[in-house]
Length: 277
Length: 254
Image 1 (cartoon, one colour):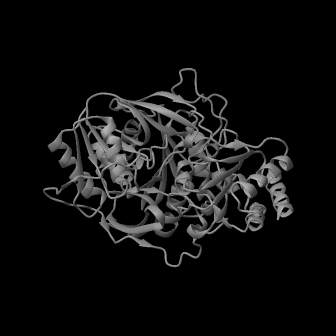
Image 2 (cartoon, chains in turn cyan, red):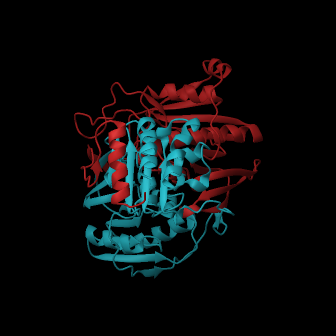
Image 3 (cartoon, rainbow over the protein chains, first blue to last red):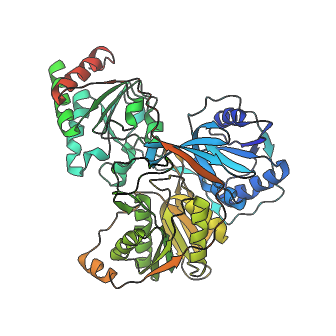
């Protein structure tokens, strides 16, 4: 099947590698426009009508999530998003927050739409042609991207990170994990829900919307390991997971794990560390 | 302002999930359900916007009869009325069509929904809905500021990008926004709210015809275990001692 890859700077090499596996002939384009959802939807629509591909492949970036579903709907299709493997026309993606995989089969004629997960394909060449649409209109007016001033905590420099997730149950329990961070001489971090709830400040969040870290040791306490969290810490040299659910996806990336109640395991761990020091 | 919030009912967090007999979806019998978490934040944002700008909040959900419970809970939190489109359709585009058909008659000024569902996790319903209604949209929203709530309305939003970057975007109303968890603080239903909710209207709508799905779930299964790691057994103390040994002599951080 003929494949059109839409590349942006982020994930360009991975998208091309995936697209190459999905079929041929392959043609790759980057869109020569400042991004807005309306402008990109119209531009890629024009490109699809010109190229007439069976399959359109994107990286599963925040930008893709913002406009590709709209584009697919315009062609009466659903975007198969966040794909981790493929045997076209069957594409594999996670569901139920990583608890299950699903084989999703494309039905009917193209164009079909697929976006691939970051890290699922090894990046190859990132060569792409540039497409400039014939006209552009957009209802969205986008201002330049910015970062929140004064990120107080730089987790990227930490050698040891102890990170806490939903398993901690209540804000009042945070000191349990904080004690472990202190015993190890590491920084305290958290998964998104903990920061959403205001139990720890946002600048301690690890994951796709927080910081990407690669410490020597990353201890995940009560974190199930949703993909949004994993992308932020997969680079750690040693990953330790403590979780009561033996099927939690975090154990897939852990070098060492303890299956058990964190309220028993963590204090025991603190005690053993103190003994060893 | 008339604000519509599309909410989804999903299995209770931490439910023990099993694949059904056909191997294509989860076994739903004996499960409990709740509002999809990001949708709860979308509802809260709608309620806060109503407090600021006046008007009404309509909650709408597509799903089987059990969904009415989640709609009732949203009414108890303060939504004014509900619309229940009865359908067990799971296809994102199908659901988009069902929502669009029901909302077209309402012509809301603003439509909010969570950025993704905890079950399918496609994160597309809001964007697809915008396309079907011909409205502008923006996703992964951390802040909503209605600049002008009378015609022609306008909204300014803060959109989350990767790696701690954000962006402000302005667009005309009506518009569709998908809401990120954590942008506000969720309220609980009050006793008064629960009492009032009993008299609020939930309009039951039968499903209109939708296009055939362009993709189907052929098989749902537990991911293959690929554990390279070492799991330490025994009681907490024994396991902790084994782990500390590894951290000391292998990872060398103690």
